[in-house]
Length: 324
Image 1 (cartoon, rainbow, N blue to C red):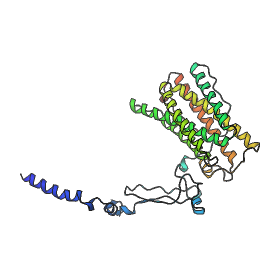
Image 2 (cartoon, helix red, strand yellow):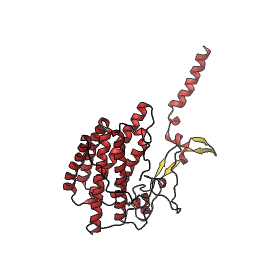
Image 3 (cartoon, rainbow, N blue to C red):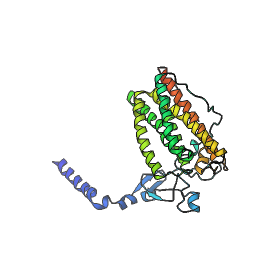
Image 4 (cartoon, rainbow, N blue to C red):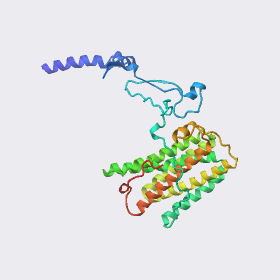
Protein backbone atom coordinates (compact mmCIF):
# COMPACT_ATOMS: atom_id res chain seq x y z
CA UNK A 1 0.00 0.00 0.00
CA UNK A 2 2.83 2.33 0.90
CA UNK A 3 4.57 1.49 -2.39
CA UNK A 4 1.38 2.23 -4.34
CA UNK A 5 1.04 5.68 -2.75
CA UNK A 6 4.71 6.39 -3.42
CA UNK A 7 4.39 5.21 -7.02
CA UNK A 8 1.35 7.43 -7.56
CA UNK A 9 3.28 10.47 -6.32
CA UNK A 10 6.20 9.65 -8.64
CA UNK A 11 3.90 9.23 -11.63
CA UNK A 12 2.08 12.47 -10.87
CA UNK A 13 5.34 14.40 -10.67
CA UNK A 14 6.87 12.71 -13.72
CA UNK A 15 3.71 13.17 -15.73
CA UNK A 16 3.76 16.90 -15.23
CA UNK A 17 7.35 17.05 -16.39
CA UNK A 18 6.99 14.67 -19.32
CA UNK A 19 3.78 15.95 -20.82
CA UNK A 20 4.04 19.69 -20.15
CA UNK A 21 4.85 21.72 -23.28
CA UNK A 22 7.72 23.55 -21.61
CA UNK A 23 9.48 20.31 -20.79
CA UNK A 24 10.03 19.27 -24.40
CA UNK A 25 10.11 22.55 -26.27
CA UNK A 26 13.06 23.23 -28.62
CA UNK A 27 14.02 26.29 -26.60
CA UNK A 28 14.26 24.14 -23.52
CA UNK A 29 16.56 21.69 -25.31
CA UNK A 30 18.78 24.41 -26.70
CA UNK A 31 19.12 26.06 -23.29
CA UNK A 32 19.98 22.79 -21.59
CA UNK A 33 23.47 22.38 -20.28
CA UNK A 34 25.73 19.36 -20.48
CA UNK A 35 28.83 18.53 -18.45
CA UNK A 36 32.17 18.66 -20.24
CA UNK A 37 35.79 18.41 -19.20
CA UNK A 38 35.84 22.19 -18.80
CA UNK A 39 32.56 22.48 -16.87
CA UNK A 40 29.09 23.15 -18.27
CA UNK A 41 28.20 24.46 -21.70
CA UNK A 42 24.95 25.26 -23.44
CA UNK A 43 23.57 23.15 -26.28
CA UNK A 44 22.75 26.32 -28.20
CA UNK A 45 26.46 27.10 -28.51
CA UNK A 46 27.29 23.71 -30.01
CA UNK A 47 26.94 24.51 -33.72
CA UNK A 48 28.48 23.37 -36.95
CA UNK A 49 29.80 25.98 -39.32
CA UNK A 50 30.47 25.17 -42.94
CA UNK A 51 33.62 26.99 -43.88
CA UNK A 52 33.42 29.62 -46.56
CA UNK A 53 35.67 28.70 -49.48
CA UNK A 54 37.89 31.03 -51.45
CA UNK A 55 35.57 30.74 -54.45
CA UNK A 56 32.58 31.81 -52.37
CA UNK A 57 34.52 34.74 -50.95
CA UNK A 58 35.34 36.07 -54.39
CA UNK A 59 32.07 35.25 -56.14
CA UNK A 60 28.75 34.49 -54.51
CA UNK A 61 27.12 31.33 -55.79
CA UNK A 62 30.26 29.95 -57.42
CA UNK A 63 30.19 26.27 -58.40
CA UNK A 64 33.93 25.72 -58.31
CA UNK A 65 33.89 23.93 -54.96
CA UNK A 66 32.26 20.53 -54.85
CA UNK A 67 33.25 19.96 -51.24
CA UNK A 68 31.80 22.94 -49.39
CA UNK A 69 29.24 25.38 -50.74
CA UNK A 70 28.45 28.57 -48.92
CA UNK A 71 28.39 29.35 -45.23
CA UNK A 72 25.67 27.89 -43.06
CA UNK A 73 25.08 27.37 -39.37
CA UNK A 74 23.64 24.03 -38.34
CA UNK A 75 22.40 23.94 -34.76
CA UNK A 76 22.92 20.67 -32.93
CA UNK A 77 23.25 19.52 -29.34
CA UNK A 78 25.17 16.31 -30.13
CA UNK A 79 28.59 17.88 -29.82
CA UNK A 80 29.93 16.50 -33.12
CA UNK A 81 31.96 19.30 -34.65
CA UNK A 82 33.97 19.35 -37.90
CA UNK A 83 37.73 19.24 -37.70
CA UNK A 84 39.68 22.25 -38.77
CA UNK A 85 42.17 20.87 -41.29
CA UNK A 86 45.08 22.65 -42.93
CA UNK A 87 47.46 21.76 -45.74
CA UNK A 88 51.20 21.34 -45.31
CA UNK A 89 51.67 25.01 -46.22
CA UNK A 90 49.27 26.09 -43.46
CA UNK A 91 46.38 27.10 -45.73
CA UNK A 92 42.90 25.89 -44.92
CA UNK A 93 41.69 22.61 -46.45
CA UNK A 94 38.46 23.38 -48.27
CA UNK A 95 37.20 19.92 -49.30
CA UNK A 96 34.82 17.95 -47.12
CA UNK A 97 34.44 15.07 -49.60
CA UNK A 98 38.03 13.88 -49.02
CA UNK A 99 40.86 14.60 -46.59
CA UNK A 100 44.58 15.40 -47.09
CA UNK A 101 45.64 11.95 -45.91
CA UNK A 102 43.51 10.41 -48.70
CA UNK A 103 45.43 12.23 -51.44
CA UNK A 104 48.35 10.70 -53.33
CA UNK A 105 50.65 11.01 -56.32
CA UNK A 106 49.64 8.65 -59.11
CA UNK A 107 52.16 6.07 -60.31
CA UNK A 108 52.57 6.97 -63.99
CA UNK A 109 55.17 4.26 -64.60
CA UNK A 110 52.62 1.43 -64.56
CA UNK A 111 52.48 -0.77 -67.67
CA UNK A 112 49.46 0.33 -69.70
CA UNK A 113 49.71 -2.46 -72.29
CA UNK A 114 49.18 -5.46 -70.04
CA UNK A 115 46.27 -7.60 -71.19
CA UNK A 116 44.68 -10.80 -69.95
CA UNK A 117 44.16 -13.13 -72.89
CA UNK A 118 40.77 -14.86 -72.46
CA UNK A 119 41.15 -18.64 -72.53
CA UNK A 120 38.19 -20.06 -70.60
CA UNK A 121 34.53 -19.73 -71.54
CA UNK A 122 33.72 -17.30 -68.66
CA UNK A 123 36.71 -15.15 -69.63
CA UNK A 124 35.63 -15.04 -73.26
CA UNK A 125 32.09 -14.19 -72.21
CA UNK A 126 33.37 -11.35 -70.02
CA UNK A 127 35.65 -10.08 -72.77
CA UNK A 128 33.03 -10.00 -75.51
CA UNK A 129 30.43 -8.54 -73.17
CA UNK A 130 32.70 -5.55 -72.60
CA UNK A 131 33.57 -5.30 -76.30
CA UNK A 132 29.87 -5.29 -77.22
CA UNK A 133 29.29 -2.36 -74.86
CA UNK A 134 31.95 -0.28 -76.58
CA UNK A 135 30.07 0.00 -79.90
CA UNK A 136 26.99 1.90 -78.58
CA UNK A 137 29.28 4.05 -76.42
CA UNK A 138 31.37 5.06 -79.47
CA UNK A 139 28.19 5.74 -81.43
CA UNK A 140 26.62 7.92 -78.73
CA UNK A 141 29.62 9.99 -77.59
CA UNK A 142 31.80 9.82 -80.72
CA UNK A 143 34.73 12.17 -79.95
CA UNK A 144 33.21 14.00 -76.98
CA UNK A 145 35.75 12.47 -74.62
CA UNK A 146 34.93 14.73 -71.67
CA UNK A 147 31.30 13.55 -71.60
CA UNK A 148 32.43 10.02 -72.39
CA UNK A 149 34.79 10.01 -69.40
CA UNK A 150 32.03 11.32 -67.16
CA UNK A 151 29.63 8.57 -68.29
CA UNK A 152 32.35 5.93 -67.96
CA UNK A 153 33.03 6.89 -64.34
CA UNK A 154 29.34 6.66 -63.35
CA UNK A 155 29.54 2.98 -64.34
CA UNK A 156 33.11 2.28 -63.20
CA UNK A 157 32.32 3.36 -59.64
CA UNK A 158 29.64 0.66 -59.25
CA UNK A 159 31.62 -2.66 -59.23
CA UNK A 160 33.86 -1.75 -56.30
CA UNK A 161 30.88 -0.73 -54.17
CA UNK A 162 28.86 -3.84 -55.08
CA UNK A 163 31.82 -6.18 -54.58
CA UNK A 164 32.81 -4.55 -51.29
CA UNK A 165 29.23 -4.73 -50.04
CA UNK A 166 28.86 -8.44 -50.89
CA UNK A 167 32.26 -9.34 -49.40
CA UNK A 168 31.28 -7.34 -46.31
CA UNK A 169 28.01 -9.26 -45.95
CA UNK A 170 29.84 -12.56 -46.49
CA UNK A 171 32.33 -11.66 -43.76
CA UNK A 172 29.48 -10.95 -41.34
CA UNK A 173 27.53 -14.03 -42.34
CA UNK A 174 30.47 -16.39 -41.94
CA UNK A 175 32.04 -14.68 -38.90
CA UNK A 176 35.37 -14.33 -40.69
CA UNK A 177 37.80 -11.63 -41.78
CA UNK A 178 38.03 -10.50 -45.40
CA UNK A 179 41.77 -10.17 -45.84
CA UNK A 180 41.32 -6.44 -46.38
CA UNK A 181 39.34 -6.86 -49.60
CA UNK A 182 36.33 -4.92 -48.31
CA UNK A 183 38.48 -1.83 -47.88
CA UNK A 184 40.35 -2.39 -51.15
CA UNK A 185 37.15 -2.63 -53.20
CA UNK A 186 35.55 0.36 -51.50
CA UNK A 187 38.74 2.34 -52.13
CA UNK A 188 38.36 1.53 -55.81
CA UNK A 189 34.75 2.74 -55.81
CA UNK A 190 35.70 5.98 -54.04
CA UNK A 191 38.60 6.58 -56.43
CA UNK A 192 36.31 6.15 -59.45
CA UNK A 193 33.80 8.53 -57.86
CA UNK A 194 36.54 11.14 -57.48
CA UNK A 195 37.22 10.77 -61.21
CA UNK A 196 33.58 11.67 -61.79
CA UNK A 197 33.75 14.67 -59.43
CA UNK A 198 36.75 15.90 -61.44
CA UNK A 199 35.24 15.51 -64.91
CA UNK A 200 32.02 17.16 -63.76
CA UNK A 201 34.09 20.35 -63.49
CA UNK A 202 35.19 19.99 -67.12
CA UNK A 203 32.18 18.56 -68.97
CA UNK A 204 28.68 19.62 -67.98
CA UNK A 205 26.14 16.85 -68.72
CA UNK A 206 22.99 17.60 -70.69
CA UNK A 207 19.56 16.51 -69.44
CA UNK A 208 19.46 13.48 -71.74
CA UNK A 209 22.95 12.42 -70.61
CA UNK A 210 21.80 12.62 -66.99
CA UNK A 211 18.75 10.49 -67.90
CA UNK A 212 21.03 8.00 -69.61
CA UNK A 213 23.20 7.78 -66.48
CA UNK A 214 20.15 6.92 -64.36
CA UNK A 215 19.07 4.20 -66.78
CA UNK A 216 22.53 2.70 -67.31
CA UNK A 217 23.41 2.75 -63.62
CA UNK A 218 20.12 1.09 -62.68
CA UNK A 219 20.60 -1.72 -65.19
CA UNK A 220 24.33 -2.19 -64.57
CA UNK A 221 24.08 -2.18 -60.77
CA UNK A 222 21.50 -4.96 -60.70
CA UNK A 223 23.19 -6.97 -63.46
CA UNK A 224 26.58 -6.78 -61.75
CA UNK A 225 25.03 -7.57 -58.37
CA UNK A 226 23.54 -10.80 -59.74
CA UNK A 227 26.70 -11.58 -61.69
CA UNK A 228 28.88 -11.24 -58.59
CA UNK A 229 26.60 -13.51 -56.57
CA UNK A 230 26.65 -16.17 -59.29
CA UNK A 231 30.35 -15.95 -60.15
CA UNK A 232 32.80 -13.51 -58.50
CA UNK A 233 35.59 -14.65 -60.82
CA UNK A 234 33.50 -13.68 -63.86
CA UNK A 235 32.52 -10.34 -62.29
CA UNK A 236 36.09 -9.36 -61.46
CA UNK A 237 37.33 -10.49 -64.88
CA UNK A 238 34.71 -8.35 -66.59
CA UNK A 239 35.78 -5.31 -64.55
CA UNK A 240 39.38 -6.02 -65.52
CA UNK A 241 38.37 -5.84 -69.19
CA UNK A 242 36.30 -2.70 -68.53
CA UNK A 243 39.40 -1.06 -67.11
CA UNK A 244 41.39 -2.09 -70.18
CA UNK A 245 38.79 -0.31 -72.31
CA UNK A 246 39.02 2.71 -70.00
CA UNK A 247 42.78 2.86 -70.58
CA UNK A 248 42.13 2.82 -74.33
CA UNK A 249 39.53 5.60 -74.04
CA UNK A 250 41.83 7.85 -72.01
CA UNK A 251 44.68 7.20 -74.45
CA UNK A 252 42.42 8.45 -77.27
CA UNK A 253 41.50 11.42 -75.07
CA UNK A 254 45.20 12.28 -74.76
CA UNK A 255 45.67 12.06 -78.53
CA UNK A 256 42.85 14.55 -79.06
CA UNK A 257 44.44 16.88 -76.52
CA UNK A 258 47.87 16.60 -78.15
CA UNK A 259 46.39 17.24 -81.62
CA UNK A 260 44.67 20.38 -80.38
CA UNK A 261 41.16 19.06 -81.03
CA UNK A 262 40.31 19.48 -77.34
CA UNK A 263 41.39 22.57 -75.41
CA UNK A 264 43.96 21.79 -72.74
CA UNK A 265 42.30 23.84 -70.01
CA UNK A 266 43.70 24.29 -66.47
CA UNK A 267 43.09 21.36 -64.13
CA UNK A 268 40.18 21.71 -61.69
CA UNK A 269 41.16 22.62 -58.13
CA UNK A 270 39.72 19.36 -56.80
CA UNK A 271 42.05 17.37 -59.08
CA UNK A 272 45.11 19.39 -58.06
CA UNK A 273 44.49 18.65 -54.39
CA UNK A 274 43.41 15.01 -54.81
CA UNK A 275 46.38 13.89 -56.95
CA UNK A 276 48.83 16.45 -55.52
CA UNK A 277 49.36 17.98 -58.93
CA UNK A 278 51.36 21.18 -59.43
CA UNK A 279 49.38 24.43 -59.30
CA UNK A 280 49.83 24.96 -63.06
CA UNK A 281 48.56 21.46 -63.98
CA UNK A 282 46.31 21.10 -67.02
CA UNK A 283 43.60 18.76 -68.26
CA UNK A 284 46.27 16.59 -69.88
CA UNK A 285 47.89 16.01 -66.48
CA UNK A 286 44.48 14.99 -65.07
CA UNK A 287 43.85 12.49 -67.87
CA UNK A 288 47.31 11.01 -67.32
CA UNK A 289 46.73 10.32 -63.61
CA UNK A 290 43.19 9.03 -64.19
CA UNK A 291 44.49 6.61 -66.82
CA UNK A 292 47.11 5.38 -64.35
CA UNK A 293 44.37 4.80 -61.76
CA UNK A 294 42.41 2.71 -64.28
CA UNK A 295 45.50 0.60 -64.95
CA UNK A 296 45.80 -0.14 -61.23
CA UNK A 297 42.12 -1.09 -61.04
CA UNK A 298 42.68 -3.38 -64.03
CA UNK A 299 45.45 -5.20 -62.17
CA UNK A 300 43.47 -5.54 -58.93
CA UNK A 301 40.39 -7.02 -60.60
CA UNK A 302 42.29 -9.45 -62.83
CA UNK A 303 44.24 -10.49 -59.73
CA UNK A 304 41.01 -11.04 -57.77
CA UNK A 305 39.63 -13.15 -60.61
CA UNK A 306 42.84 -15.21 -60.71
CA UNK A 307 42.48 -15.94 -56.99
CA UNK A 308 39.00 -17.39 -57.58
CA UNK A 309 40.19 -19.33 -60.65
CA UNK A 310 42.80 -21.04 -58.46
CA UNK A 311 40.04 -22.31 -56.18
CA UNK A 312 40.91 -19.90 -53.38
CA UNK A 313 38.96 -17.14 -51.64
CA UNK A 314 39.87 -13.47 -51.59
CA UNK A 315 40.51 -13.55 -47.83
CA UNK A 316 43.40 -15.98 -48.42
CA UNK A 317 45.39 -13.35 -50.31
CA UNK A 318 46.24 -10.00 -48.71
CA UNK A 319 44.33 -7.22 -50.44
CA UNK A 320 46.27 -4.50 -52.30
CA UNK A 321 45.02 -1.69 -50.05
CA UNK A 322 46.23 1.72 -51.17
CA UNK A 323 47.42 0.34 -54.52
CA UNK A 324 47.54 3.45 -56.72
